[in-house]
Length: 117
Image 1: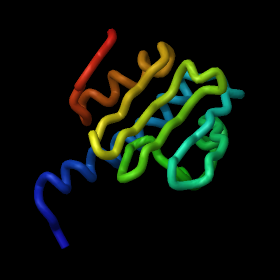
Image 2: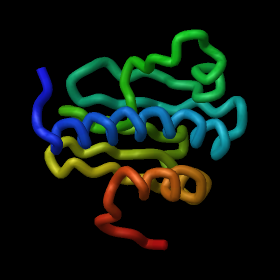
Image 3: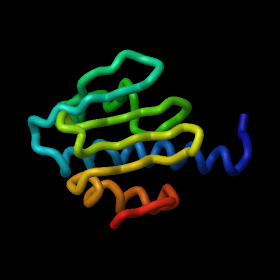
Image 4: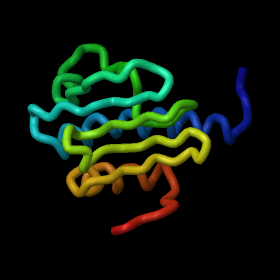
């Protein structure tokens, strides 16, 4: 069933943001980088972007786009990552390496609400 244009645009943005997240993480982080992934309703886990990129199935247990839950991807020192807020429908990208790579890719899909750049 086809819903409204707003729903299709939201779904397209969700798919695009998730698809852009992994290549951006592989560019921003060294190959041995392990991220902590937090989802307030589920078990946390470790995520290695470079390993994920080499998998035949690219499906993530939790993606970066906040589709109903809070999703957080953090480097071990908590200096870099993403914070997805489902009710605000925002995705905060922080930390210089990730901001440099991921933020420019997202601007065609998500509006910029705040920026410290």
